[in-house]
Amino acid sequence: MKKIFNSIIAFAIATLFLAACGSAPSGGDGALNVLASTTFLADIAQNVAGDRVKVESLLPIGSDPHSYQVAPSDVAKISESKVLILNGLEYETFIKSLLENAGGNRLVIEATAGLNPKEDAGSEHGVDPHMWLDPNLVVKYVENIRDGLIQADPEGTETYKANADAYIIQLKELDAWIVEQVNTVPAERRLLVTNHEAMGYFADRYGFEVAGSVIPSFSSNAAPSAQEMAALVDEIKRLNVPAIFLDTADNDVLAKQIADETGVIIIADLHFESLTDGAPAPTYIDMMKDNVSRITEALK
Ligand SMILES: [Zn+2]
Image 1 (cartoon, rainbow, N blue to C red):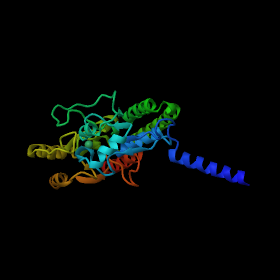
Image 2 (cartoon, rainbow, N blue to C red):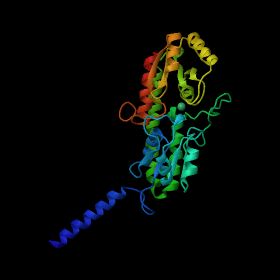
Image 3 (spheres, rainbow, N blue to C red):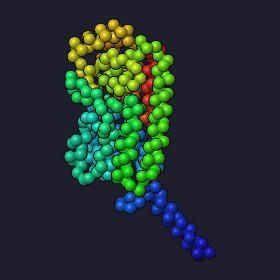
């Protein structure tokens, strides 16, 4: 009886030990600490990491990475990370000071590495970071994240490869679904006006014309001149643009002024830069589906 009891204790201890470690990579000091800059990157990376590693987001849900003000606790989060996943292309303007203050060593994965960004010499930001709004480009994000995780945790190689392959299939399905939805919108109505220049890659892939943006910059952290506002009003009238699409985090004051002058409708609750807690955008794929549904509904 005593022997059975000891076995149960031993089993319980083993179970506790496994629970504490999860299915984390063995060896070293336990679980691999993987941090992503934003919520949608954390979700993309979690699909590659699977059950092996938990990926945390540095920024909380609902924050705008373009204007993010760092919190004191962010330095500690960066310090503890062994892998840090960034979008790159100057998207994370807040990260430089955090990295300088955090110290320590970590593998930094730039999800956009190897992709060719759009450039705009007239913009405050020289390159357009919003590549994740085309799921075909997110395939490269997945490959970069997969390769980085394999480098940091070689024992997980097979897991990361299989998870990446499975998620890439989902991204291709998402792309086909978006094409179907967009095909319901007459070609002459495939016009996008957003708060800032966020939809360039999306427009290229799905046959939209970017008619303009309230803020003519790759960042929401900028302001238009009176002339730029007037030019946008003219363009909206000329092309008969049906709608302006805003991220839920965007300030809608200027868009409302434009709507007053043009009669354009405002869709103000899209999600370009952050997931949501629950519906409608708890994952990257849900975020894209919700945006595309809302955009195609408004333009049909
Ligand atoms: Zn943006």
